[in-house]
Length: 188
Picture 1 (spheres, one colour):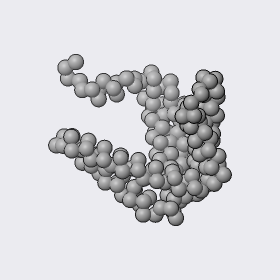
Picture 2 (picture 1 turned 90 degrees about the vertical axis):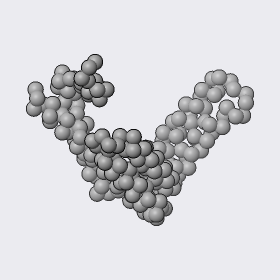
Picture 3 (picture 1 turned 120 degrees about the horizontal axis):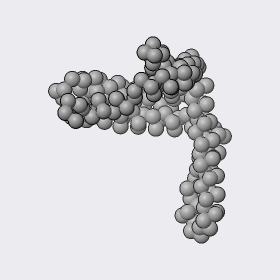
Picture 4 (picture 1 turned 90 degrees about the horizontal axis):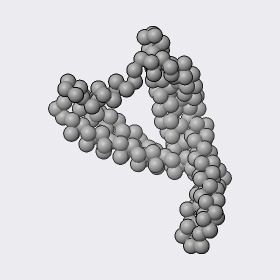
């Protein structure tokens, strides 16, 4: 494949036919995500509590399914029952006190942002002097700043920051899908 890069090959997998097929879905999902994101930005505490409750329910469902599997497998070891019990307990505790779940999510988000920054800096160093390495380094700086903001505001402002971060992320996801859907309609 002379003249082509790996990036070109991956991007060329999204041809016009695929984009036309999914343009309506992109517009609908993009609009909904944009709406949820904007709502989250305007009421970040509510989005934080919804995310915490969602996580609690996921833990409960995961714990129940793991418990059922352990029962079907007739595991006799106490170790096999630890995961299902911990998932059920964590889900129950998060649903009982969703604000504590938000505080835990804030710490996990800060940890993720630090890891994202590390990866961005490493990739920027690897890419340098190629075009775009500065953008990757800038992404690392922003991730560190957001992580530090979470850490220093923790736990008092966790509900506001988690909801705000989720709202901004959902808003840009929705905006991207909307623009993608509009662009594919214009090309068709």
